[in-house]
Image (cartoon, rainbow over all chains, first blue to last red; front, top):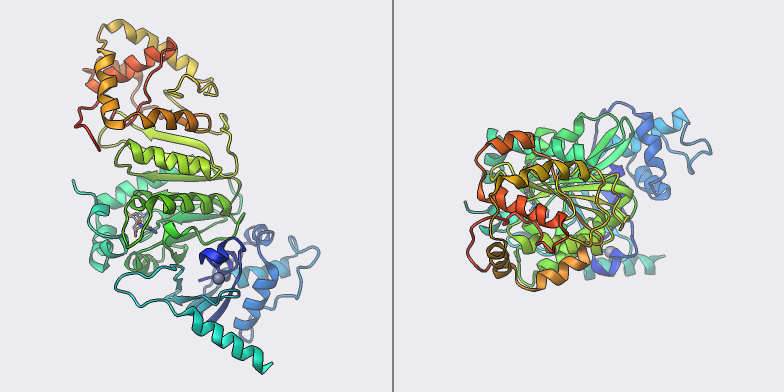
Length: 147
Length: 331
Ligand SMILES: C[S@@+](CC[C@H](N)C(=O)[O-])C[C@H]1O[C@@H](n2cnc3c(N)ncnc32)[C@H](O)[C@@H]1O
Ligand SMILES: [Zn+2]
């Protein structure tokens, strides 16, 4: 899963759907695809991205030697070659192979396996049921009490 | 022929074996490619513009891989079958993949996608495949969320295999309620083999845009459909000549036939739908004149007669895939 896809995805649990909650991504295995830089594409995607969410996701996954993203979109972002190159790498080259996405609101976990996120919410016959939401909430509470 | 969607839920039907068989079948490959090319044509994408598209029910990527051939275009494929997706991944079809049940809604934020195709998939949504499944709710949610995630004016071209007229109407109603403009189009309506149904939908434009709709051969079967494309006029004149062949069928028998099957609810529904959704018939490759030379089949006769009646301002039943067909009563 690319970070472009991640950035556009939202939690689809009925209670969350209308609020368009973003998903927090974690990865245990990453891959880098060497896709040819397409400045026009990157610049066109810019307006539909939630930049802060991209930044958070990318910074948590980025490895040494990979391009850096500035803390905010530069004013000339849509035409700034250097920025667009970093952006393109972040949204279209980095690939989360194994990992998960978690809803920031309800704690729902969407696993990522073989580069494919599983967005199905209902239980599918013959497959392991999705991870419980209660457990997640407990985790959150623990985190809070630690703070 | 048995429909796969009657055999098992999609995530079970398209298991490892079936997914492999499907993807390697040369006939399937050929047909899916042909349909996809037509769907892309109907998307009427701006040339050389960077776009992000969806392939809804992408399966193993036979459809989506056609999207790859366009410059500056990236696509994301959605499918419920893990086996189909695994093959798509293995075949490196170029799109980012996502496992999703369309009946749970398209999982993208509003206003993020430039266009969508869906090839041979949406008919699956009519089945209640799991406990408490509500096909109608699922269909509604599918169209709603699709309309939301598309950018204004973005198109969705949905090719599917409706089982009957009710399904066509349900879908139309859901699409219209979701706020889509556009309509239904049937390629090769007179060929049982080649006939294909497409929804050509425009996001966020609940009004029909007659300029944007693909060219029609016989549009606006309803008398209250005054919005129809003006380019039909010439066709109608051409058709007029045909009325001289003296092969008019008894209209009453045809009408009875249809009402048997579709019931009185249909009338009420169509009057609601027709203000927003326009029926279109694709021009067949063969010219009208060529066709006229051939022996007319029952269907053609019925259609031609209906057109004449329409021109005369008569109340004529809508054309469906069942028009002019022998049928059993009931669905
Ligand atoms: C006939 S295949 C078409 C695949 C591809 N579009 C092509 O042209 O080759 C139908 C696909 O629809 C998928 N499908 C059926 N129901 C679905 C659902 N509820 N959500 C997502 N995908 C579904 C199936 O898994 C299958 O891959
Ligand atoms: Zn949520």
